[in-house]
Image (tube, rainbow, N blue to C red; front, side, top):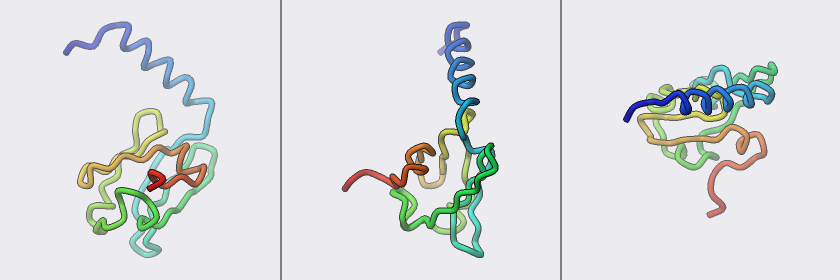
Length: 99
């Protein structure tokens, strides 16, 4: 599938929108505190225990060490766990589906 100029314009528009809001610039697993720590562009640092987050509950420290930040900074992805987290939902205290 080829990327069109329209695809590029849409991506640039999404990035411009994200720049106006808090977004993650880096994330890591802190094995000392047993928390996934996110550093936001605003200077805020958010640390969440993995057992509270759907998709991370039974994760090993090795799997938690492999965290990718999306280009917009609004998502986190753990390839080993095939888990995706939406940062605005985490900031609102939503750690997974209602069930």
